[in-house]
Image (cartoon, rainbow, N blue to C red; front, side, top):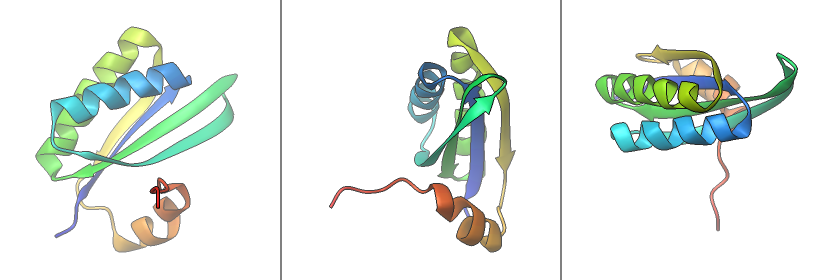
Length: 101
């Protein structure tokens, strides 16, 4: 079964951490990747990627966006109910979290 993909894009690392913390506490989702880009609106842009079932990802992204907005700037958030396999394999794989071995 394809998982939903949730994204929260923030300015600043503290905002991203606050958003991610609230998101994973709000619903049964997994943080699958973190993307950092220097120069987004003059600062560090951080996008946190989540996966899980559609309802959980929607709840997590909503909660994370609210929490992040209390700390700093949330640029955007979005939920893709069933990301195409090509998106996961060719685009998102560039940002996957590394697991400890």
